[in-house]
Amino acid sequence: MGLTQDNSLPIPPAGSLNPAGSLNAVDWVVGWARANSLWPLVFGTSCCAIEMMATGASHHDWARFGLEVARASPRQADLIILAGTIVEKMGSRLVTLYEQMPGPKYVIAMGACTISGGPFYYDSYSVIKGADRIVPIDVYIPGCPPRPEALLYGIMQLQALIRKGAWRKSLTHQPLNTSPIRDVYSDCSKAWEIKEKAKQESMKEAQERFKAENPDFKGVVIKRVAAPKFDEVARVPKPARGMPPAEIFSALQARFPAVAVHGNADVTQEKWAALGPEYVLDLAVSREDYHGVVEFLRNEPALKLDFLIEITAVDWKDHFDVIVHLQSLDHGHKVFLRCNLPHETHPEIPTLMDLFASANWHERETYDFFGIIFVGHPDLRRLFLDDDFPGHPLRKDFEDPTRVVKRPY
Image (cartoon, rainbow, N blue to C red; front, side, top):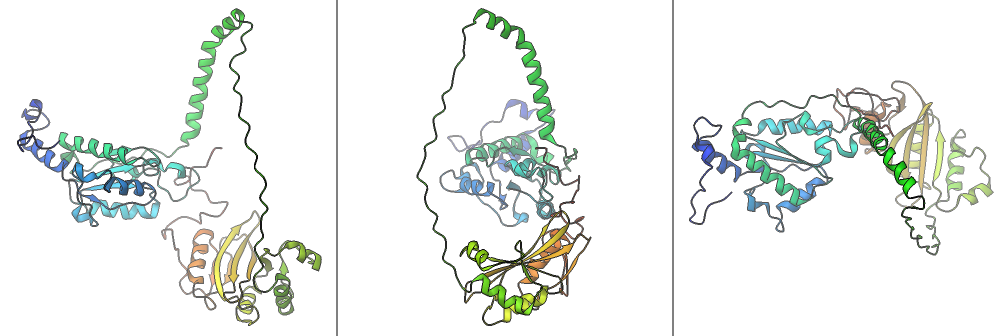
């Protein structure tokens, strides 16, 4: 709604001027002004944010609809367009932003991830199953992601609600979605199966009658187009860089006899040759040799594996493997180390922070997700999850029915 040709306000509907109705003249004018001067907060967390940016850009230009000024401060905004996935840790920040916004204020939920968790609804420990569980939502825009035209339509729907008096409603406390999280896929599958069974039963008599009246009917045969075949392209292996794995292993075993090649107890020259030039040396080390092996690989001049690529872990059925990935920046060769740890509540292993400062973040992440204690770490605390998060989510035995819905298929 805009100005008329003589730049005056358009005449409101007659019913809206009725003092006994839901709106009076002042309400209508205030609603008209608020609907056409929305200031959205900059809030994009995932791919839907790209569509939101496109909506505000020159091609679609949401300024035509009164969303002229996108603000970076919640105290200067009255609309949040939730564009993208909302994880649990971000959820508390979102609530803070919403509470800092002056009223009246509005929220648009844009995209499947925001509305219900989207593809992360199942098997996810961190994605919130719908933003309406933490903040009240005024308009839902489905899609993955919705196009800019859909967002513009949602904005127009919000403006229509504001003109009808939604700005007064937003000044009061709105209830949140407190429905239990359930396996919606299985529920829909069962309902569909019952519906299809009833449909087949209702059509059974007609199908039998049609077969009797048309015994020669064969139906429509769909011929599939044969997939084109392409000539196989030979793969060119990458050239070997740095010291050969056999030489690295020999130098290391001379110092640490218990070190072995993972998956190859007795490695002969023929086996080394069969592994090829792209093979990265994968070593199994004990917890007692773990720190000493890494220190030797780092400080030995011929090896000089001075760059820590990653520290992580793998949860097997009966044990943990702590994985260390090292590279020599000068020579180019790489080495994997894996250390077997027992399945305990908090297994322990020495820290590597005295050798690599970057081990700080890797070890905190591994502690956060697997619960492995790195002895000697000066600041071992959670990195991604809240301090009160129960358990460690990348363990195979992790279960939390309040957060995780197991995939039924």
